Image (cartoon, rainbow, N blue to C red; front, side, top):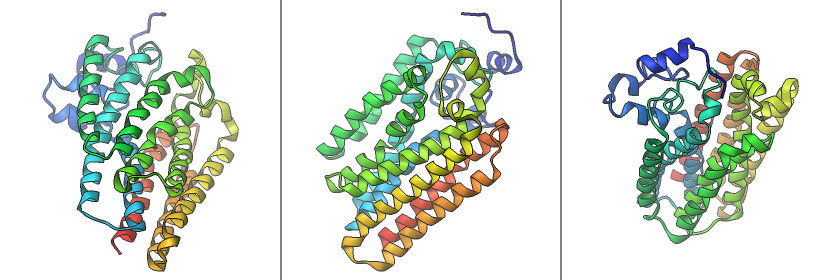
Length: 326
């Protein structure tokens, strides 16, 4: 592999271990014991946005499934356990991603200060850390019903494949969407014991949403990706990115609206339906606001609008939760 020249980002990773694209003064750098910091950075604990984006489809599913029949104490456990599980599985997935991408990360300015390419953690240590996180997550999964357990185990194939997708397809964001939104199916099954058509529509909405936000994210690395031959929708769409983002926005909103209609129309509760559809509208409005601000040629703008998707997803989750409580 070509020798990477010293950069401020890599020097920072060697001197204090901080990662170049983590927020300055994050809780890991400030408060975590020194021995744990490389592992927490490997799990992206210093960048919690991924945990939110993994958790939010679970919250959508729990709230909408509860609105369709009934809300109970079990749903509170589902929300809490999904939050812990999202943190653990996102950490395990990021660890696996960094193991498989260690040579690529060493060639990209934004990622070369990560724990493995900067030498903070060995591949062997990373493998052990990944296994620990996955085993604890499995203990949570086995508190659910058998349908949800089966869905959880089957998701591992998507997690394993995703890091390699950028090597063989221009659409790696599809694989990320399939993996990151699997919780919509799993959480619905954990609530009701089944996966109705409404859950499938919600899952599809999440995939379209992921294509929206991860295309924005990928524009940060567009030039580096082109140099090293990594594929992405950002590179594929180029100057047509705006048109594609609008299509993903429309698809995400329409599919979420379909999920709401499929779930709530049979219940004949018009107030619930109005509130839930209000959440769908607010979700789409927030995404449209992001597009109005986005400059795909400015990495700082791409990062800011990518991060804004946490709020977009939580707005929809809040409206659906209110509908469930009505």
